Image (cartoon, rainbow, N blue to C red):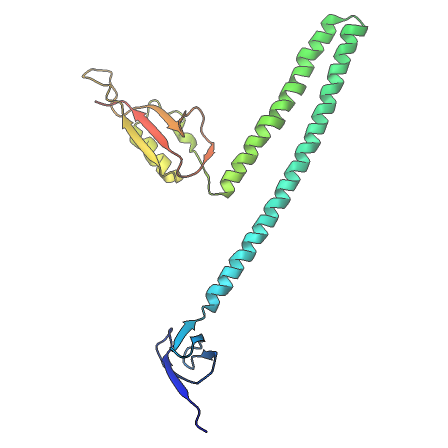
Length: 228
């Protein structure tokens, strides 16, 4: 009984391949490319990109590992924040109780007020600022950095006496890509005019007051400068 043999070209190297009718998977005898027969009657074949499949699986495992590390990091951060908040609440309560005792029980208003002002102020106010503003801002910056955020270069902070092109180059080197230079057209002939000098910089609609903050590369930045 004769065995039917099909001939196809390898999708990778182009060599002619012979295989028996009914085979579901073959390998190129020249380059080793694995091929699956998807429709035997119409002789349609699909190349198996095993390297690509392995790469996808590797990327998936790496991403899962990154998420796992990120979850652990966030868990440690939450634990530290809870400990810090507990300490802050205890210290604040101690200071308040001592001040109340001085004022209400010992009738020493001056000492109680001074303790509340010089000790309670830094403990309560400073601790609250640290826990509710500074730490959340740092956490937000870390998240932006992990998602591709970049930091504003510090050399652009004192921009009032600089040419807008210098600021533009500095921002572009840092990685920002959505920058608009706006000529204010506010200069006429005069001795003390400074064409091209920066008047203001806005980042995401807010006037720049400090450098070093982290933004995404496509954040809208507008450099307004004096010109004719």
